[in-house]
Length: 143
Image 1 (cartoon, rainbow, N blue to C red):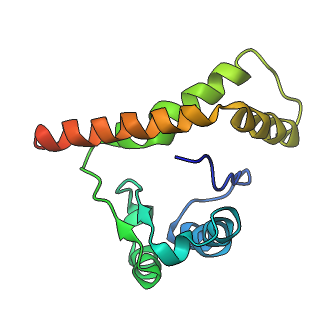
Image 2: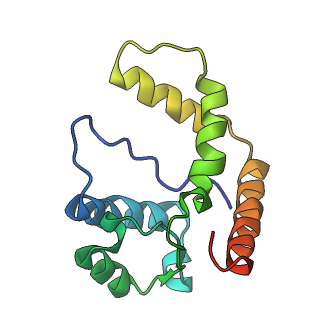
């Protein structure tokens, strides 16, 4: 709820597989949490990602189990439960709409600015909406 912890642009042509995702968790996300949210790793992390094969691969689940992060269950066929999908990305699109970028670096820079321009209250709203979506999904017996 306090904003983006990690912004990691995936290089063009990169295949997102379990090994790549595991690397991002170990070498990018965990250090970013340690830097941006001191003490959070020790106090406990509630982690949510969808149930894509990359996220449920044995190598990934082994890493997350070793971190002792609490994983929230993601109902099958419910991609709309990810706050990035229903909140962050649409807000970024508003900021980026109508612009053309000459290079990959220009795109990355504009995206970085779009994320920085999001108001802090926007993140609180995203997670409030996320909780409502989770509850609705649970009450409906799945989404």
